[in-house]
Length: 110
Image 1: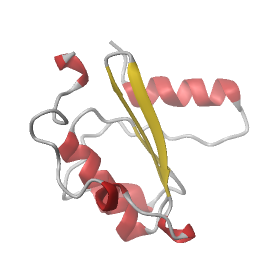
Image 2 (image 1 turned 45 degrees about the horizontal axis):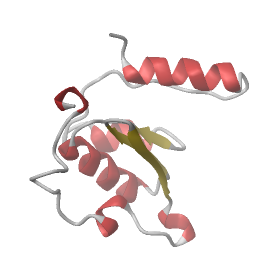
Image 3 (image 1 turned 120 degrees about the horizontal axis):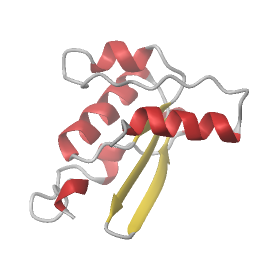
């Protein structure tokens, strides 16, 4: 299929053509996360694995960037905005450790 970042960026631009959206197709790693995230005003995370989700959260916290996090399991989903500048918690504040039994499934596992 198509890259999720590219597809999401196209959908957002279709809804609001005045926004600037940059899909990141690179694999995010401990070595490049801070550099990638610090260049942007807001980060949208639709990753499907806990390691990436925690890494993106931590880089957003360190960079002071708001994080829009979306996830889905089967036919259910959730969308959360984490913005520590406004005094709110981050992803790791709410979920200190990955749920190794249920929460580590990827989209392809469903």
